[in-house]
Image 1 (cartoon, protein in one colour):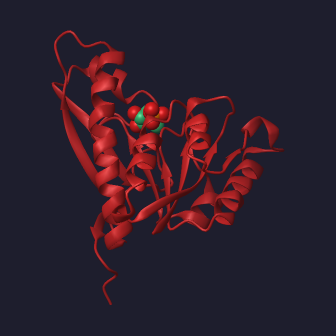
Image 2: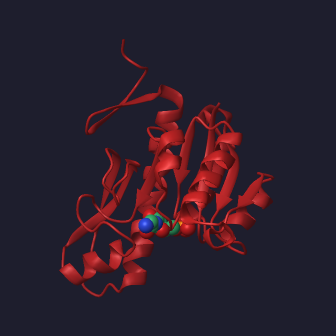
Length: 204
Ligand code: GAR
C-alpha cells in the first residue's frame, strides 16, 4: 500500500475518513503517521485511537519559521511517505518542505479554486454571495491554495446558510472527494504535468 503521512490542525474529520478508507486492504493506502502543528486536538486523538504514530511540531518551539519548516520536512521524511496529505493543516509549508516533498503533497481546501483561497474559504464564499461553492484537492506549491488541481466537488449555498452550516455541507463533500482522489492516486499513481495532474502510471 501507498504510505500516507497526514498533517492536521483541528478536528481531523478528513483524517478520519482516510483512516476508515485505509481499513479496507483494497483501498491501497495506509496512514503511517499523523503530524500536527499543535497538541491537544481531536485529529491527534483520532490517530492514536487507530494506533497510528503521531508527532507535534509547534512553530513557537522552533528557533525560527525556517527551522520549523526544516524540522517538519525531516520528520515527515522519516516516515518515507509516498503521499503527504494536508487535511485541515492551518500552516503554509515553506521552501525546505517543498524541496523535500513538493510534487507529492496534496492539500484539501474548502472552496472551488481559484475562488476564495486562504483560511476563510466558506466565509468568503458566503460574503461574496456565490450560489455554488465546494472543495478542491490540489498539489501544494509555493502559493496559497494555487497548486495544480487533483479533484473538485461542487456544493450549493442555501439561502439561510451561516459559515458553520455551509462549512459542514462542504466537509461532507470534501471527505468523499478526498477518499476517492487519494485512493486513485495511491492505486494508480499520478504525475504533475504543468497545471494538470494526471492519474495513472508515469508515462515515459
Ligand atoms: C476542512 O474543511 C479543510 O478543507 C479546511 O479545514 C477543514 C478541516 O476539517 N482547511 C483549510 O481551511 C486550510 N486552509 P477537519 O479537521 O475536520 O478535517
